Image (cartoon, rainbow, N blue to C red; front, side, top):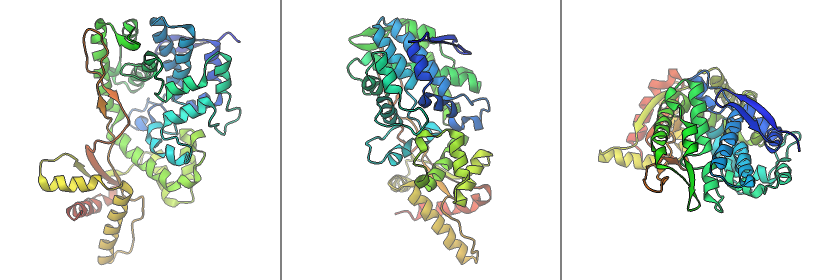
Length: 411
């Protein structure tokens, strides 16, 4: 069955993989992750943040195994979380979370709505990516006495049989977060993201079939939560990142009919395809993203107000699709241009609207004797903190004026 592989790592110094992990690493589905940046557009702000989901997956698999061994579970359970940790990102589209919203559209009729569900479908063999040699993952898992359905359920966050195993892969303090916080900190230079992984792992335990931690872990876990908040505020939801993501979503929306093979692409391949589009607007947006010539914020409003008139406007705004808002703004601007004798009309894609996503928060008990509030991200639904309208620099004044009039007359 092979002898496994040894990997040098700037984070863990040395990672030893068993034969099962080696065979999974060598699959095309895993190798594709070399071409997905872990932080998508963050490198537009932090130039060294070009690390990939491939190296992240290696780290998660390693940490998941360390977690399981600390809990003294069976060898088969160790392999189970190692496999799930390694494969947990195989369902990501290019630019990862930026394009999550397109998963249901690309896989219409297959009852798959998230990248985790797509990952499960790939791992179980329900979906085979159009890559040379793809489709071997379920057979490799079975070869090592693992049920692909169990691995897929862990990836899709639906493994209810043994909650402590699910929490290793996806929980308040899991292998995924422990790796990406340390890795992202290293590659962005934001030192607050550094986390004492070893101490947290040493204090993990199983209590009532659930993953918990000894009370001595309170301090390093609080440090981890603080690091996570710093990374989100300074890195993950940076304004420039949101601008690029909003532009990419619009380009993909306009080109979606020609992107049925999106699940097999890497980041650069998608940008290249968009640059080759027959739509000049898609091509323009793709080139702007590539060369960091991004749209600018023309208008921004905070979505919480005590003013009754503003609250009514905000409530109406929340009910509208961003695409509808964009069309109505463009129509308003074009009408004003015609009145002024300007026949150069704006087109769909010149003005973009967005509600930047902010993760929902819930709480979880991690300790038997003492509780600590732990932030656990749920689905990325917006809390409507801000409403942004963006466009190219030369249109900012015109668009800002139009948005204010639009909101004034919103019904």
